[in-house]
Image (cartoon, rainbow, N blue to C red; front, side):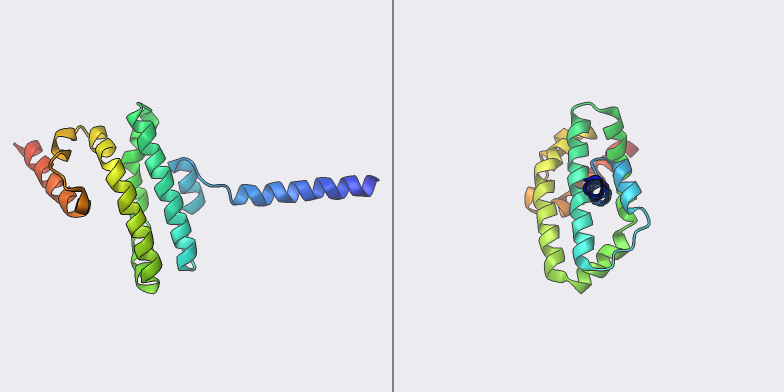
Length: 153
């Protein structure tokens, strides 16, 4: 009976160690701990991580809109964090264009939903009315130009 108990406890410890290692991040800090400096071996692992990063980013935007001060800081810090993966994104976009395109399409769909919230965070709600959600990348560049012009005037 004692051996069975030892095996059961050992199994539970191993299971908890395994599940903790695969736990999804819920904050920017957790993402940094999990992925900072990581080189992804294949497209599937990269896209899995990118989806996790996207989920955390949008959840952080939600918290920031609700007034969470740390979340507001994290939304601003996300850009720097994501730039660390830019070269890997370019690599996997070439290696697995179909999978990458699917990820990109999902991201753009989510971004369309979140743009009003993001614009609100930066106090740019009025400018958002002029943005065409069919191609937010192009329109975002126009908004950035408008913001830069307003700031310099």
